[in-house]
Image (tube, rainbow, N blue to C red; front, side):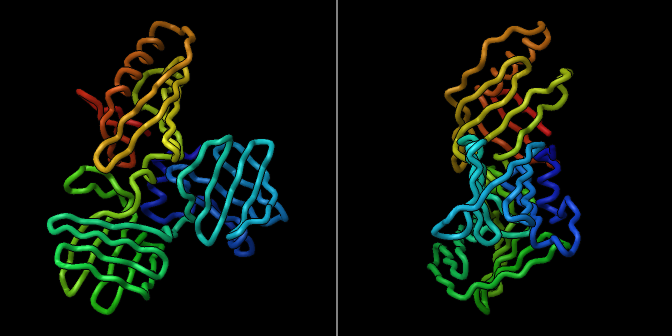
Length: 298
């Protein structure tokens, strides 16, 4: 299983982590569903997905737009359109799946001091500033796989450059998946872009330095559900991600008893999760900040 840490590295470098021969490059595709990498094999009449160590086979079904695949045994669906996909397994909704090296068709970038906000959807974009708003209707995108950078030309006087690396908002402290540079009328403004959830949700994070044979974990899903292993028991609940905060809520756990060491680690871990108030990404690690400290995950 690829760790979210390795996935974030692949997002930054644009490296494809599987090798495909030229004949299958258009049939075997790597997607990143938030922090969860998946491999999609379209080479047969059916779709085969590799998710962690699980291999799922799908059959195609009619769809109003794009292509929809279904696996009834695992209550799984995979819908694709262009470079994007949506994955659901056992009612768990994954974040937007993006073909490695691709940008979302819909994306927002923002910056502070001075404030600016840019929304892009396909060939259209809108820029909001205190001095006035602008709309663009012929947006073009070019990318570099070597630098993990995209240049979005808005018009002859305006452009947006995105780099695939975690970016921290200068006012809220919230991390975003892309660093953004807006150039408008020869003025350069910096900011962040994308959805914070893309850095947090999809894959399973392992808690560092616990001393246990099986480390505690945590998994955030796109629909606000959170679950994991606490050292002895499984836990589950919900989380809320706002513009400034991350909080866990409605938490519950199973009630097995384990060794004193495992129970001590578990009780401490669950107490710390109860007061989590934000997250950050540092050195490809997830940091959950709670009252009085932080939890570091690989």
